[in-house]
Image (cartoon, rainbow, N blue to C red; front, side, top):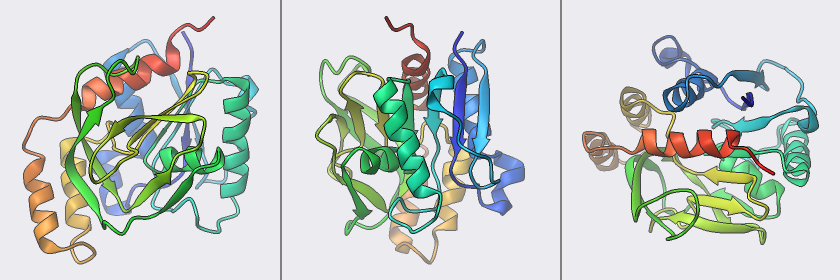
Length: 236
């Protein structure tokens, strides 16, 4: 069974880490819920670990981060080069939130802070029919972001969208790279805690409505299963 290498690009807020875990731990739980036989490894950029050679990896999952992909951190360019190499080598790769944006930027897309403001709580995304990965007409997943992919790369097809996030899910030519803006790895409790964290940064009414939205059903297990299968399915 392929191993998934999780690239940690940011740290969970210290006040939440003990209760909710790190981003790699959240993703490992998501993967285990979909298939308990799959092992996950972690490469932590915030802890100074070096990026591996994508050719040596079975599958790659790039996490979210408080950083913006346009920030001038010295690790952004090497991570973009890593993404381009993995994509060119057809190493199965998924990016979530920051990872979604980073892959898009690395492959020629445009990312910036949206003038729509904060997206948080439960959002509903429309699915492109016959996309080959996610069944149904729509999917509900928690999100937490201001940045968005504004213009996808020419090699990407938008398969998930909403009025707030027009390019919420991208499937790339070749069928080995996928990225999504919302967070299927989040527990409801963690998504709720993030809403509280944004008090004072986002309008109070938005925070209240976002917290209330999390009482509605979420399709995290469905999207988590899609991501797990995408990363580990046999490819000819």
